[in-house]
Image (cartoon, rainbow, N blue to C red):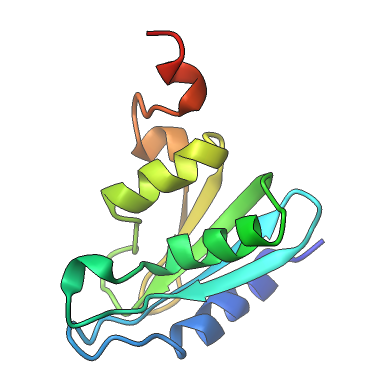
Length: 133
């Protein structure tokens, strides 16, 4: 298994690969699967802003495209004074696969604060909740 310090370092390294010429807001993420496999991601912007992708969704998309669907935790880092928490779109995307996911949010000093996804996305919905309508 990967240690929290190792996950932090992987997220920090991923942040360095961010393509963010419009916002100048690099974000990195390191996603640990339940089997111990780790996928990293960075934000990738585009001149057509809505088609960019956040670091969290990049990491999770890489994992899913490789057949991984069970996730333990994700570390997210940005150069912010406060802890970098995921946007609403990322929260809903992650909830689809892992409502109990642990999020470790870092700030510019690489201090960490831990949240559960359920804590950040109260009453999120996924395929199973939609079939109950």
